[in-house]
Amino acid sequence: MPRISKEELLSLRKKFGSDGPIARKFGITSQGVHYLRKVYGIPSSTAGISERNKKIVAHYNKGTSVTVLANNYGLSGAWILRIIRREIAAKKMTAEPRTIRNSSW
Image 1 (cartoon, rainbow, N blue to C red):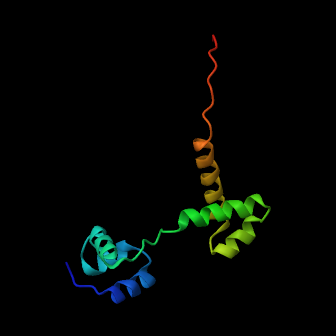
Image 2 (image 1 turned 120 degrees about the vertical axis):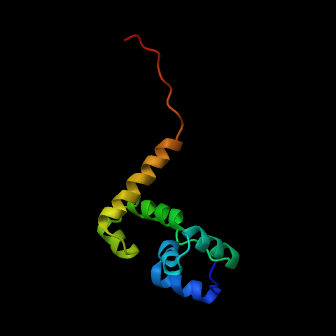
Image 3 (image 1 turned 45 degrees about the vertical axis):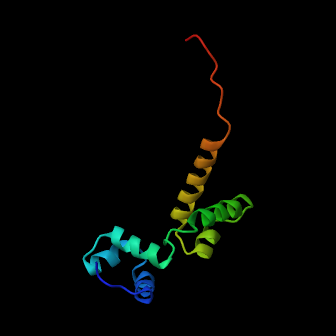
């Protein structure tokens, strides 16, 4: 495995954004980069996304428009809508299960 310092790994994360391109640059697997991140204590690029998504849905439920949310979070309107739909669907899945009535067809 190539020797990559913590500072170099941090700068590469800022440049590339994820483990895959860093791995390709050094000819290793993304799991190898993941391992180095864990050793150095560098969080994943996806850390905090679930909290961000919950905030987006909360703002949307309070009446903030999709366009304003997209501008505030640096995402497209389509992506904001996708986040809202996923969060609502996930909330429905964790809600109380419905009872199924026994009916004769």
